[in-house]
Image 1 (tube, rainbow, N blue to C red):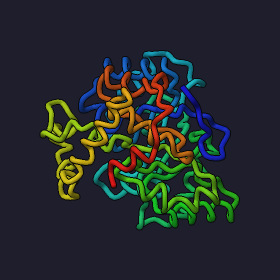
Image 2 (cartoon, rainbow, N blue to C red):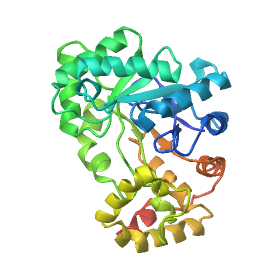
Image 3 (tube, rainbow, N blue to C red):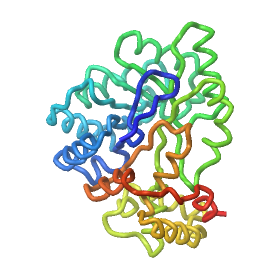
Image 4 (tube, one colour):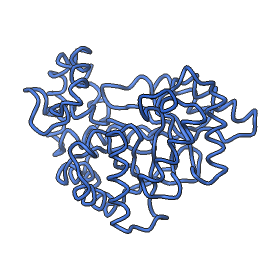
Length: 318
């Protein structure tokens, strides 16, 4: 495993990490979660990603039980949570100081930890002043409940506002952003965020490197059983992909899969390698739902790809 600094912080996180979106609480119980986390940890993974919204908190409970039962030394791994969607009532949503505070305390209980290494604002909140959010995050850091705070799917201008507000008021600025990044979603990280990488050296913990599994090619002939799009509560995601014209991309994905085969890689491995080629990526969050998938995704370091040209990968989608 290789490790990268989280932005300009001193924290070194594994360039492959493991997250629980969709899987924990839907496809994965505590027993399987323990096996997956142990497999990841034994391979050098030191960052585990979560959020209050994942399976309505059940995801954090499962991860918390698994980590607790594994008895892995706390100073050898990092865990995150995210705040925004906590419930249906007005005080249970958004980025008000109250909800940020309440969500953090709830996440600590569910994850069975004394502090969060990383704490993200899961989306921007137009109803809350950014200064209120920045101050709330700074308060949690001062209380020792959070080490680093960041954003997820914020615009570059919103991140810059948060950073400048923090600096002007002697508060802690955001350290990282968690954007979607894959071969089918490149613009935000590569173009929109370029100025803030240069100004603030922001770290990134990118999600959906396989575009929810679409880049593996397994959806070209329909939705397989036990895949994430077969889960009733996530059928909306497949509908959204179809509305966005994903089926028009299947021919290009086919070319990508053939290229992976040429280099003795699976499409998943090639997609992950491509993400890691970007120096502004601190870590790629894997979302495997079984041991074989996870081992496949982690097994990218012994694959010799000296003759592989990044442009050849990208040309599959031009």
